[in-house]
Image 1: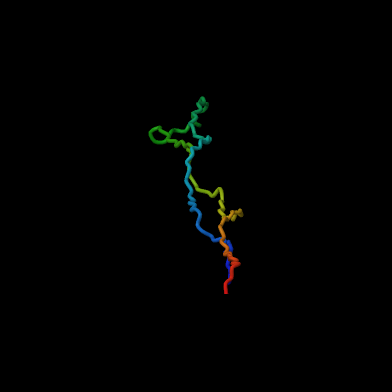
Image 2: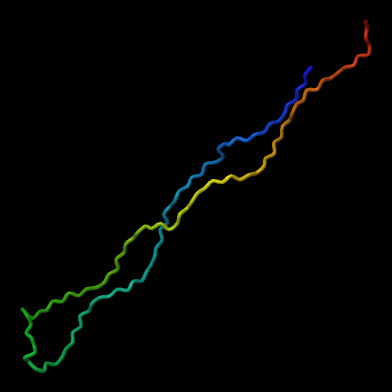
Length: 117
């Protein structure tokens, strides 16, 4: 007679656990900067005429045209990389306890003392 017993063999299998979705979003913020600007102003200086020969007669109808300029802020936006994000996967080791019931065959021997021939 051959008696058998169950043995427990445990191994591991990689199975999907969860799905992770990674996305990025654009956050808008308002920045206020003070910028110095300049502008041209017309300055008229009046001087007494000393000698009439030095005075030049105005050209045309006596009107002089001067173009005055000013600086205005010019805004431009440029997207620049500011951060590099690396994503990696690491394995974390842990332990799990496995419980199982094992069966063993046992032979029962009955001893009979009354033997008849």
